[in-house]
Amino acid sequence: MDEGPDGGAEDRSVGTLTTLLLDPLRRSGSARVLNVTAPATTRIDFGDLQGERRYRPFTAFGASKVENLMFTFELARRLEARASP
Figure 1: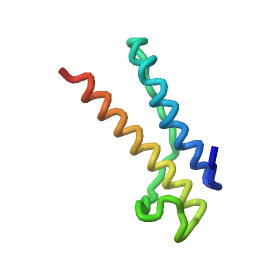
Figure 2: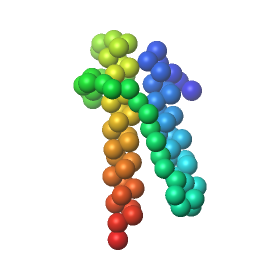
Figure 3: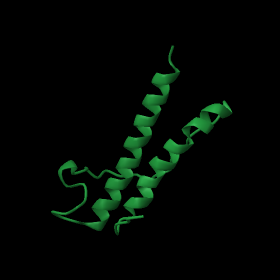
Figure 4: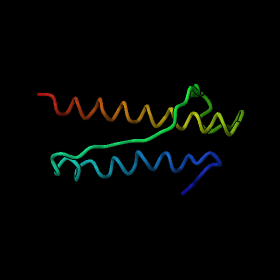
């Protein structure tokens, strides 16, 4: 697994694992998905996601936490839309 110094591979694996487990979780009937992250106020530079122009470890860490939150909110939105009649 390609991992940057900010542990980005670990953060991407959260989304991958959750996505792979969605069908078994749905079949269980009462499953919950819980993502734990750290508070972050970092703004994500969508034009430089890999930090090629400017890399700062603390900023990369904060961005990865914001990305976890974005993934969680989007997953909740999609699952709620699917459950709606």
